[in-house]
Image (cartoon, rainbow, N blue to C red):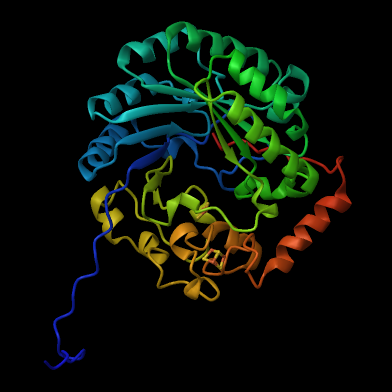
Length: 377
Ligand code: SF4
Ligand code: FES
């Protein structure tokens, strides 16, 4: 049998990607806190450009039709939207599993009760520290910690399943055991120990926030011990400080493969920090249907699959596990989004990572933090 001539044989259409499982809806960039590790972009969306509740409702219907199962409602602070209840109701109506990602500030007992009645499924509460002084200092919001504790009690009273998201860095990683105990006391079913990822605004405070190697190693051991001890009581997810890892994380489970983000103004992004990659253009829900964006938009196609990869990823046996790491991190540290993530030990750009570690070591524990600037009104 003769092999088909590649010049004349009919071309097979490229395989359509499977539908996304999760959608992150950034309802607003407004936020009462000003955490220096904010991973939102430098340029925030103004309130006047935000999608209306009706536009979000349409987005949720489209997402459900596309195959999305989980909806993460985030920000900024989603409670900054007065119409949050209306937005959640639309998500419930679309039969999506709804998770509210919040700092707790702006959530009153009445609002939480209303959200429960509407059908909100889950709450994820962020934690800046284990006591008021340092937590409020990092969040830039006096009284924030006390407010959060009240909200956590209310969440427990109502009976929402609760995840605590503890953002860890050089200034609080030594208090990891207390963080785990606090999450337990608050009744969390899941704790995310999330070491700061350096995207967007967070890059400005990298030298101050990057944990030391000793802290990173110790955190790994503390998490391992707690996971064993708390088996069946509380699940602990761990996002380690990847600057000390041997291999990078599989960011987004692979670009354009499992999830999508919708920015407050309706732009659809393959990941939270995709805007930091120059040259990518993003379609907007206001102008193109979500399914078409998922299947055909230029930004989603840019790093889908493996064809875009440079060496050493292109011929690496791990590429189907980590997808070459994080595109936004590669961009931030090498200036090329298609480069191997420099947190990989096989990356030819490890010098960029070593320079960041040196800079952090030289800056010391007192390196300045740059509080997040607020979104325009
Ligand atoms: Fe992953 Fe690329 Fe490193 Fe291989 S070379 S382990 S694919 S990041
Ligand atoms: Fe964009 Fe990792 S944050 S690919």
